[in-house]
Image (cartoon, rainbow, N blue to C red; front, side):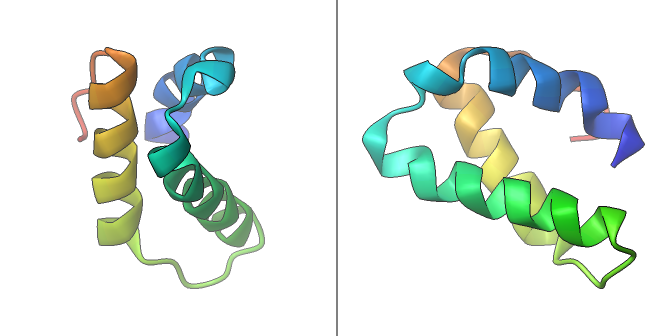
Amino acid sequence: MNRHLDTLKKVREKENDIPRGLRQDWDKIQNIVRQSKNKEEIDYGSFKLNLNNLLYALKIKPDSYL
């Protein structure tokens, strides 16, 4: 998750601009981050897919790990 920290911060800054249809994706991403912090197993593929969808919609350049 540390690799994506800057990207997640950029999304957080534009959180109010997230389209209604993608708000669930943002909720999923936040849950995955919480799970990761708690050392729980996560679905990294789902995390990357949902984050990429948000980045595209918010016109944020993805980090090199995505």
